[in-house]
Amino acid sequence: MSASILIVEDEAAIHQLLAYNLKAEGFRSRVVETGEEVHGALNDEMPDLVLLDWMLPGLSGIEVCKLIRARPETQGLPIIMLTARGEEAERVRGLATGADDYIVKPFSVPEVMARIRTILRRVKPESVAEELEQGDIKLDRAKKRVLRGSRDVTLSPTEFRLLEYLMQQPGRVFSRAQLLDRVWGNEADVDERTVDVHVGRLRKNLSRGKEQDPIRTVRTSGYAFDERFGR
Ligand code: CA
Image 1 (spheres, rainbow, N blue to C red):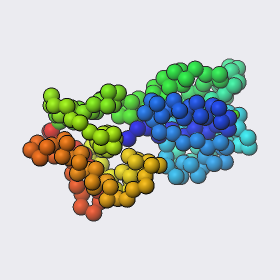
Image 2 (cartoon, helix red, strand yellow):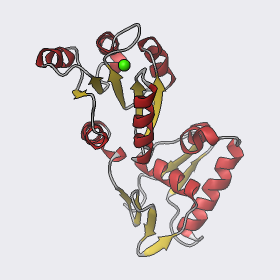
Image 3 (spheres, rainbow, N blue to C red):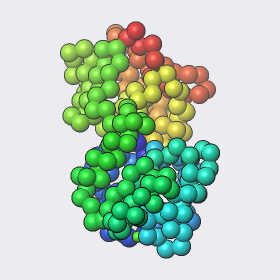
């Protein structure tokens, strides 16, 4: 699945702009407006990267950064600090506190996206890869296209996201609940049976009942993209 980014920013105009553009880039994002909420947000779901504003009400961005670095499980979590302070001394202080990068406001959106992609390429390369390929199945994220050999595979948007998510981590078994959460997200007014139905359709479209099935059903657990598929 796409990378998940936690935005910590109290100014609505800025976090809305960031969230909108992250979504357009295919990333998932969540917003908290204070440093105090960060701990809970990290416990809910560990993001792949944090965009952290320096000037926050209450706990400052620097303090939040220190707290994130102090927890063993988030020690290596990438952090990009956002700040209006552009002075060299502040920049050094920000980086010394453990931020991976530092962006001065007002920023250009493409610049922020480029910095995010640079970090994700290091920590989660599959989330920025345009193409996922395994065996004779090729999934093109930008073109929203799936090929099996030279055959175009027509998938519904949900089937596409499902395949994309499974292909990102071949071999890993996802429960129906995890798939509902990651593939259907907030629109999930559906139950776990829905996952089975969509996996069934995805399989049918991929294999047409005659080619090798790349999806593994793991009894009582869920589904995985077979890591040995095509090998
Ligand atoms: Ca602020």
